[in-house]
Length: 325
Length: 179
Image (cartoon, rainbow over all chains, first blue to last red; front, side, top):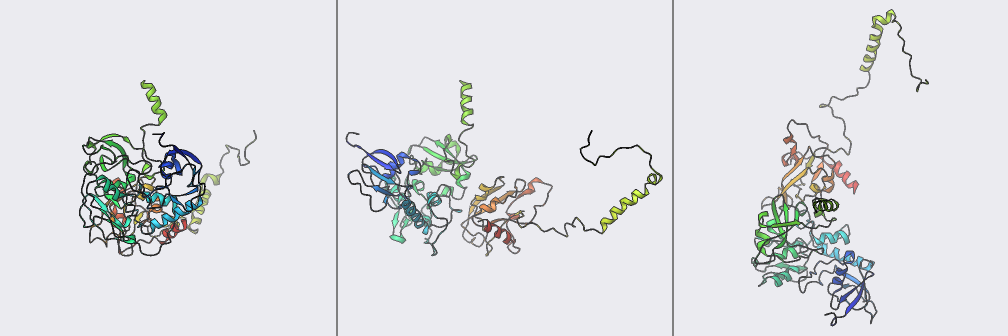
């Protein structure tokens, strides 16, 4: 493999990394990790064709490549721009990028309702994080926000079109995971909306994953609707024998009740494996699941409140193990 | 030994004089002190009838406000419960049904909302955290009670009466100043 594809050297915010040809800047940055990774609202590594829509991952390319060292004239979306040998990319070190990102957040929030206190996604919402990290404190928008009539898209999924930022992730998810996609984007531009068109209930074993891929609260779990807030539930890694999917999930527990089942999301909010609807919607009892242990939650997250991953601090555990040995 | 202060008195076991033995001058002296207080300003107030003014920043019993149309402002977002250092607040959310728009402002509302007044330390963090300006601390005092269970205040005690609104303008001004 490595003989066919030579590794390309790329520098992101001063950090050099070698990646194979065809890697996007965003994925190269993700290999480095840390805060040099541009945020992404529409790109989802597990969905083909996603990306290039939200413009939150814009970066500055200060040197095109070794052969052509001219900088790229405009900021480029890092999720759909592939790296070149010797490319130099500026993300957080470029004030131009930060300014542009602030503008993008403002644009995304133009029509996004300020209903975080009501929204079930609050606490794990990417737009919330993005607005907190990159957005301004106040809105300059004075006009009425775009609103839609509420559409019922089935007994398991709640669609809030008002909250949608049109990232198309759910459309790709439905297309690539289920056979016979029945929902999509209708109308164009400002009138575009996610719909099942003739308000037909969406069906299939994996369509529940559109909840997980949604970066905002536009698609939420109806079985979890208003049950609790995400930071009051305890995320646990759990699995069960499932004939449709891997059965590896994260269950969100309050007391002895499983309030919600989701896929296991990584640091970028992407699920490790897509799970089926039976696991997601029907297995709401602790006896259905084998609990592996508490999920790792970033300590800066609101979900990390009162969340303990170890029964005792590491040192104590180490000593206990020594004694047992 | 050198005394520490110059107020030290030598104790002498001398016999009392006649005037000292009848005690009357000392009793009258005491009465004079007592009587003089009749004409001085009283240090206390007659409490239930007369109430001392509270400080502007006094924090007492909570109130769950209604909006100008009388609908409950609280949407059960849980931020007060997160902010509460004493973990005194619990709530259960419910979805607003059709026809209840006049009762609840948003599509989600608090079906039950309880504050454990024995846990509450009246710090005002819930008021600070509330994004909907729904919860405020008033100048009302939480009354004493004989039963512990009576200290868990539900919505019946917390939500303000539509006809007798609780004035929280001073608290609001204080909150805005803090911003």
